[in-house]
Image 1: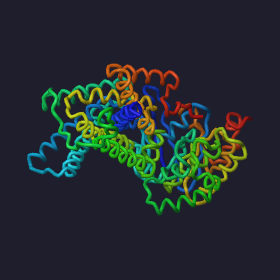
Image 2: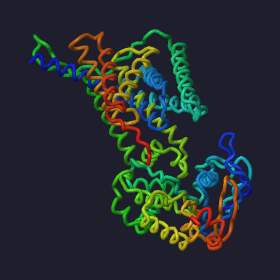
Image 3: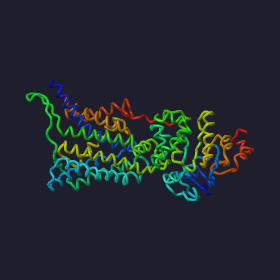
Image 4: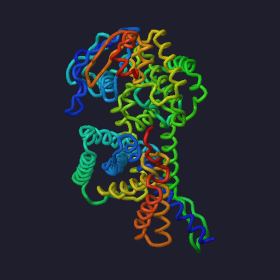
Length: 233
Length: 307
């Protein structure tokens, strides 16, 4: 589904990714864990073409997207729930969702909207409310709903649990599991390593711009190095 | 009674000029809302709208077409097309190549564009002012003939109604249409809109084009109202409309409308009760006063750090 081959990414002169290779197969949940500043968000954003990789290749469903503009990549069946949610706070919940389905026709959007409301009944209740007035958890649901509106084959989530109450985190992870069961490929970046690896089919550990470890979620959870560094011993 | 009529006369004059300012101010505020920069060539786009309208009117007259609605509509459409193209070109030439650079760079390139357009019109149309046919004359008179008479001209009514129609259409477009929704989303978080697959360059172009089209409408209306135009026609009006946009809260469309009306009324009241020479003193003083107490303008939103 998604392949990164020896990807290097720079911010100006500073290299943030030093040759990263990652593979996400169709129908999998793949978790990427790592400390603050390891380059997790950079890796996801490189997939989206913002910034573009300075060398290496990013391949989505067999197509080389390394040099494609962001807007074009994001219209190719891939959607992102970015770090910090980035919902359009001045728009209503419904308008935010319609922004997600910008390139689908009205009838299609109506159907996907019902599906999203079924997944997140809270959003239905708040349909006409300004998105910025909602709680963090609701905003996260909205960000996920907005990504689903484009009917993606693959969804990228950047720290969806950040700053949320444990009970909401639980809900979000359950939804992510449901998405996989519905056939959507999931690429998940998390600091919450325990839950992310528990849910994942496979995982990668990113350390200062390099992949340190890769294995199944279960094996990584059992790995003493991972336990020491990311699971609090 | 007379005092009251005099007051209403100033009010009408102020609202007339203010609604035209508001039309121009929309262009400043929309562009600022989307890319966070001031389009300093906007006054020139308005001036070019007025010239195009005049050329169209003259052209129709030589063709012997004298039916007023046809003249007005053709002049309006020509002005809107030429100004919109100009607005689109300004963005392509002066803004897009330098986007993402230091903020001073697009500012300078836009001022350069403004100087270029002004001087181009100087050369092409001459630097003296040219008479603009009134086309719509006559009006209503109120009050007795031997004392002060308040007049409401058909031209003023035309300005009100046209502005009202433009503002209504714009509001509907922004709040209801798919592109309007995208404009609002882009103005809030351009990077996120891009991550949703939206071609943000097209949205940016659209705001320049819409602003320019509204400025062209104002160009035709104020050309007829003032009765003459010259290549510097856009400079003062642009400055005033920019002030109106800041006054109302730059980035806010209702703010631009409100700012335009306040500025127009304050100008005409100053001219009516103090002296015409003081009108700029009062309107810019008002701007300073409002910014002192509300730095974001009347309807502007304070910049909140996203949590």
